[in-house]
Image 1 (cartoon, helix red, strand yellow):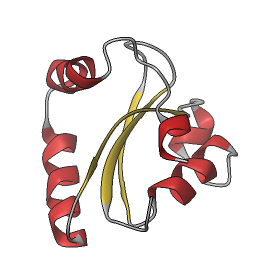
Image 2 (image 1 turned 135 degrees about the horizontal axis):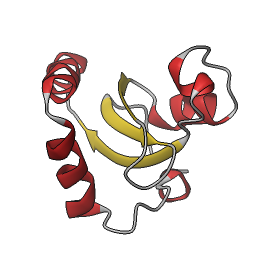
Image 3 (image 1 turned 135 degrees about the vertical axis):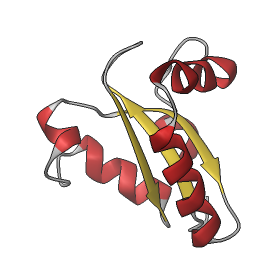
Image 4 (image 1 turned 90 degrees about the horizontal axis):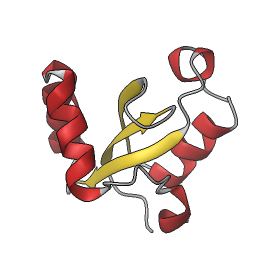
Length: 96
């Protein structure tokens, strides 16, 4: 996977704590979360499983989507994840 803007959702378990983020390098950013290089929310709550992501053509588009998702109700985020990843598998292995 080449460097490309992306929006992603991490979880600590099925229906657990969620984190919505944006990056220009998905593989690197998820690796950072998994290895607690990123201090803060994901480290504190062990939110390390990549359960959903969406690639974008531009960073501006990805940021708009991230802001939209952050304003969504929790149930809408859960439904988004369930549509493409019903078993809540960690998708990191599919992008490296």
